[in-house]
Length: 174
Image (tube, rainbow, N blue to C red):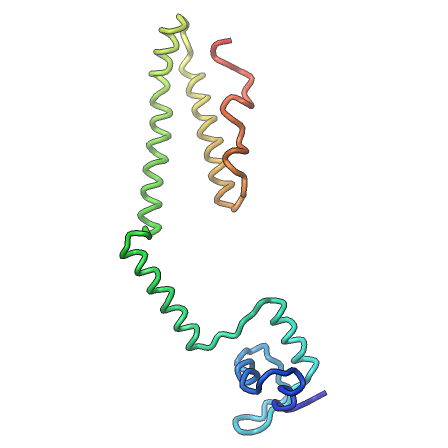
């Protein structure tokens, strides 16, 4: 059934002003766009489907002024967070995290010769450095894989990761 805006407002219990706002949405169904000052024609079934889809998708009409006000408020909130030192630019955080990761890798790999010396002295054995290096590489590979999983949005928690040596049947002092 084709109706005008007043009839549409009566049928759906929505104000004409709201339908005027909806008409700004390119998806709003207008059967006959009569132009400014003239009466448009609407198909009630198409308008019902538009309203249903809108409700199901949670869409909310936001005027240009409301959007601008929201964006300004968000900018002010971010600026305040920066001024208070509560926000750190992502580029600074990324550089800092890269330094931390590099330091951890270097420390892990460089500490193998110290560990070899201590094991050799304490247990009177001659541990091959390649064994320690291989364990370090496996640990770093495992940690890198965890980082990749978290970057992809995986929700695996740290407590669900097997403890060191749980999956490893080989030991040094057996």
